[in-house]
Picture 1 (tube, rainbow, N blue to C red):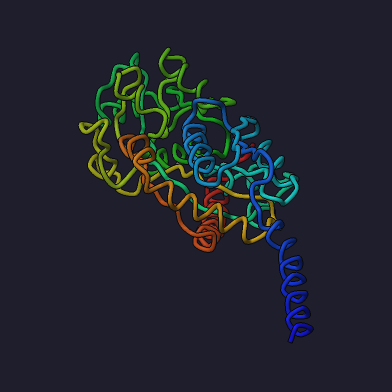
Picture 2: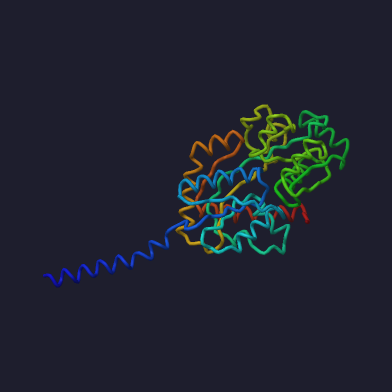
Length: 323
């Protein structure tokens, strides 16, 4: 009996040692995690990234640090994350241009589908069409009248050719039968500053991040490119209400990891995001700015991303956009 007991004890010890490496390999994070953002600090994507970083830090008990790497319509950040080790310690907080940039930068060194492991779409927010306070129009109808009187003279600012703002404005020109002059910038703050100053006449703003300036009247919002009016600017109609129901534009933010990142890490991050979007902090920060909180699964986000890339392939061909 004693001999059998001894052998059984040895077996138990052996099993516990065999299990230890597996448990250790599942530990995450094991060092600070960088969340790379392809846009300037203070912009709408940066706002979401910092909320995400704090939520992940609180939930997963590790350090999550936001690092801004703006440039090339977020391609610099995307390329950096695509090339990072697939261990979950370098993540990408992406925006809608991720699905669009391959049609603007055909030589980019990554693919939006194959270079990343989708984790979760965090939120989306509608575009708001705004004009400089120096432009003598107060309604969308007045803007249309002025633009048609001066075809090609009014200017619109964007964060670059092929970006969300640019494609939304091309869509608006098509639907409204107008023509304006495109002025690309390297970041959203440049667009906003020059819109306030009257250097450019109009621009699509993402409601998340731009709401304080919209509410304060530093720029004049004329229409919302979403399904409903926004709480912060309730007097501003939707495009449907001004007669352009097809004018819809939103900007989403999502978390991704390099391709090959282990599934248990992806699932752990996705679960944390799903919990975070239900929190009071996310709700009180983003919902008043018109954001829709999502927090979907990796599989759902992957399906949506594939569909969006296919959609933009058609749109870029239609508008013949070139960098």
